Length: 464
Image (cartoon, rainbow, N blue to C red; front, side, top):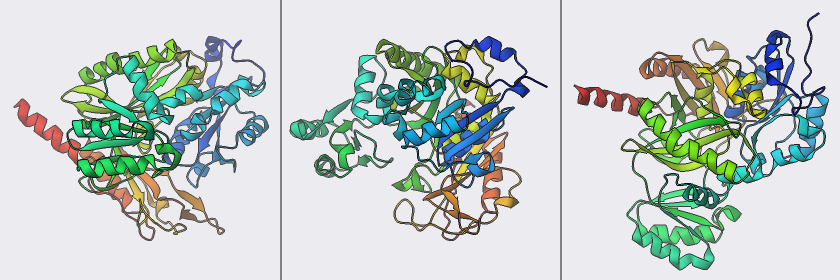
């Protein structure tokens, strides 16, 4: 009978030699993994982790999609004591934190301070590291301290409101206002009128986004093309994961209200080796240097929201977790054992793992509830998922009804991802699969990836 390694129940992460672990028969390695969250990002993470030999994936609380690749457990991400009980009951060997809120609330610190949980590797930064996303003012100050390229800005409270009004007047339209704290993806306003921007600054400071906008960061508008670059770091070493471009507006051609994301494409054609080298040298490496200099314990994902300004990268924002819906595209392109990769990250040995990414292109199309991102109804019966043959459908806002049927349970419902040799081919596959899924009021954008195809065609013509 093959030896089953029960890590970390019988061995501390301080005494485990990763090389010894690598030397074991990987098919015999029992790996109980807990993913925290309930969205499309968490389904994509669980889907990838479940492909690891010997992996048993639990998701708390999960959705109808995560139930297909693992076991859902009804524990909320803010219930730290419930998560502790779950880790002990299921002999969890690795915890992967999906959303930002538990990181900002200090779940990593909670694990490290507990005499039992401290031996369980957890993917995510400590509370101070999570401030890179939890406070835009902190993030901008951090970038300024370490010379990381970003937009000119000013942090404003009610005490220096007049300074903020004057700063707005010194800028050119459009004007960017960002709530300092977490606002469920709704705390950013981009306004064309100076008068409207000055009015909205006052509204934000007086509670438009609750406590999140007690401070507001005013930013100079950066003109260019956005891209999301994902870094996995153990605090010393790092891997660049596949980059992606997401689509935030509800309507085709980037019209209408902002959403949590209507689709994604990976890789991004303009992310050339030269551009990514600039990202590493000007942003990734100074960021890691800053984290080390400030004694921040950071073992996890860094999401770099970047603007490509004439070939030069500028940081729009940091996130301290993977993006959504970018994760639904990115995970389909990662090759290798993702549990091994994340274990190595948690143990500070990311330089010892094999990592590769597919040359294929992934296109993700998000199907949403009618009315989203404003009022929408839940509980709509979903059909057609069993007809999919050429894609992966990552559930974002789904649940089971009393009859065990899959129903809608959110604004963003399901993300259909297809892989192919080009954006055009992946688009054709993805949209063909989207047409098979049905639920009342369903809506999706029809132009995901078309801008990148046009830009690529223009580039080819210019080269000629």
